[in-house]
Length: 300
Image (cartoon, rainbow, N blue to C red):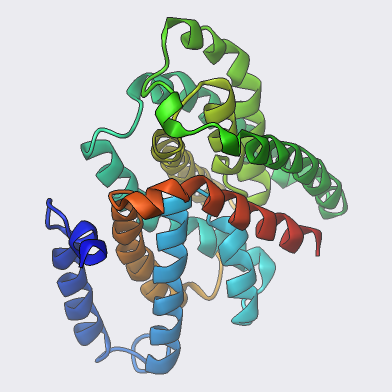
């Protein structure tokens, strides 16, 4: 009973989201297959996957792209289209989830203000590079990303003996000096977001916990908020690219009817899991496990 009472603890918005989702599915079912090229069974399957992915992303902070790309390719969506659909889906999930974290006071505003300009710079550089870098070189850049992600993963595993109770809840005056030194990490991680649609949270969360002395829950909330702002700006860049004819709008976007609504529910569930002490205790472990699986998948 404690598990469920913690999950539905006030503010009681989760029930509202579940009821709204049920109403959404009911009315949308009249348009499936007729107006929307998507069967009801496929919609429900993708919708449940989206809830699971949204929950894990908002709880652990892992970038959703490395989880969505294999799922979408399994659904016969071409990788180039899966990248865009993944980004559009993340906006819905990270938007509602990040705002929940923000309203609950978990987002470190000073860190967001310091890092967002650098993140927007990096994602712009990555997006522009993607227009000119041949696809053959993207694989080499992916290996560079994996090497750094692997290093951060090892450092995060080494930090498991450090409990969040031993860490200050906010960066102190000495930690604020490290903001400037953090800019290369923020720019580079966001560069890969713009180029390969890989979430910058995969780097930011280990960096914030190891270098900025943030507890895991605060680092996850802050990184996800920065990621949300970054991918919204990425969508803006895509729209500009489509307007000028530099990029094309992806096909298979009918899946967004299932994915966006699913990750919204998952985002609301994931942000509430940290209210349960057992889940909060293993939040860092979950991030390590999912990041390890993502690295293995990208290598494969």
